[in-house]
Image: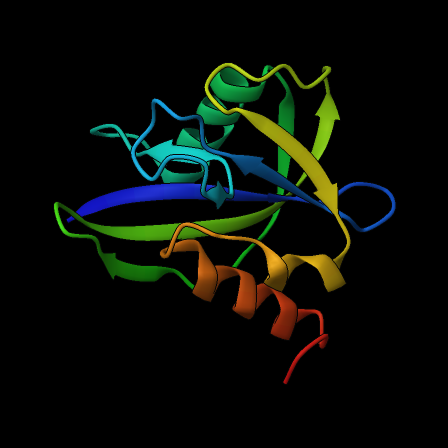
Length: 132
């Protein structure tokens, strides 16, 4: 199993940052929460800060952790570890993804998410008391 972090980056209007995977990535054109694999001897928090800097060229601050989700894809099982974050500096510049969009909570369930992200999104919405 691979431990993978993901960021629920929230802006000042309480919108969530969503990223669309590029055609070259696995799960092409699926929407996801950005993040990445935890390296040996790296904490989940350090991994997420590093990955967001590498993928989006911005600095984040971790606000809160949420419940992780184990998911088995055909070729790999991951444990997706989510954190609610806020952007503290930088301008978003995509290094890997096709595009991004800030979305209101009422738009989130309409996206074609990577399967491992779906329980994270549902848990986030429950956390906000948007769905029960």
